[in-house]
Amino acid sequence: MRQNDRPPRMWDIYKKGGIGPAIASMFGVQSAQQMAFIRSVMKEQRKQPLFETPLAELELAVFDLETTGFSPYNGDEILSVGAVQVDGTLMKEKQFYSLVNPKRRVPKEITNLTGITNEMAAEAPELIDVLHRFLEFVDKRVLIAHGSGHDKHFLNAALWKTSRVNLSHRLIDTMMIGKWLYPKWKHYDLDSMLNHFGIEITERHHALEDSLMTARLWTALYEEISAKQVHTLGDLYAYLSRH
Image 1: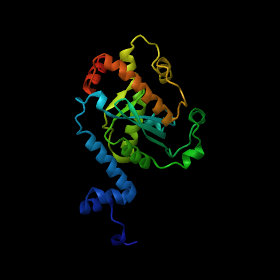
Image 2: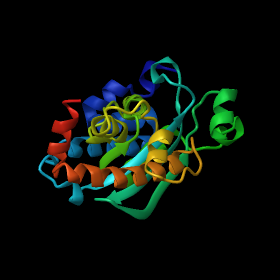
Image 3: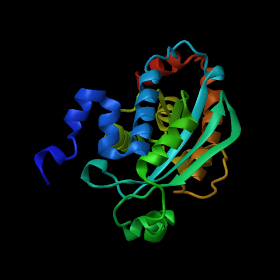
Image 4: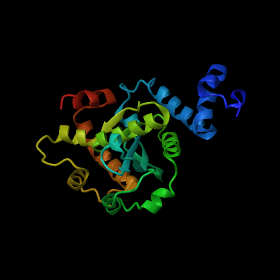
């Protein structure tokens, strides 16, 4: 092939047409569109003034991830994403669930825990597709998770890998609320807190089922929070920062 016949490099395309065509040339049109959407969601989310919003008026999305292991920076990947919309304390019918193709083998112990096999994972959608649909579902809602550190690390790693952005949504952790409200408890895992409030444990280690149970836990915790005269998201963050 002669030099003049070579396909234009990404940098040449960028100089001529900007970042959009350059990304499209590198990743394909669909992935470029998904990446642009994800980046725009993260940008818009940072503009939201939510601290003065009453907890009863917050639009929320409770979510959970299942993963191939515990470290997204050592090769572990997201296996499934589940979420449910909640307005204030009212759980809505809208739910989200998807498997994710991790592009690697699923460890046997993870299959035993989650029921997700290598065959199921291999037929699942690509990570960027699931992130796109998850963020469409979540939109500008405040996120809720139980023991959010694990989920936040994996979401951040996935967002950076696919779109070079970090998660900018506000996040509420029901485990941290439990530690604040009940400092003398010995255990704050999801099962222990569900049992304390008499919430039925359905199917554990299933992203959607765990999300639904955590949403019910949030509803129970909200009553305790309100009794302490904590009314806004800013109030809640202020109390949690002291514990």
